[in-house]
Length: 122
Image (cartoon, rainbow, N blue to C red; front, side, top):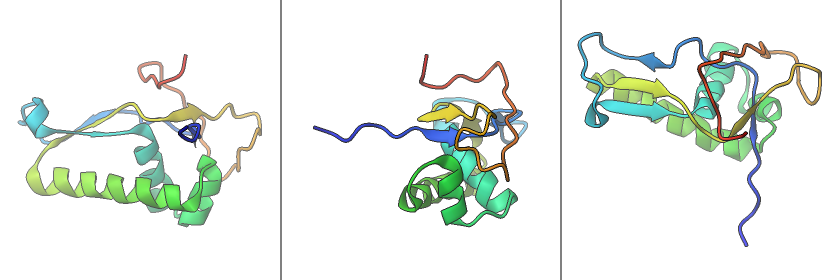
């Protein structure tokens, strides 16, 4: 029996979920999809200056999980920059931080929620 899914805690959704060249076609061959948890790992590590260990605590997962998420996200960013593709941020296995201190580490938590994004939970 597979291990149960451990949801990644996300404290900030992106303000926009589509990036890329202004003249790019948005067909599937020219598009890369980054999950919201990959976006959060990039935000915490590269923008907020977290270590992978701190990021793992913030996202409520193991450091090795964060390392894998981060490596995949960086590969996607490199591909879109080098090949001029469109980036779409959506989906993933996450839950939004409730901002009530339930496991929230404070630093890096912005608790911005945007109505246009959905995750895999109802």
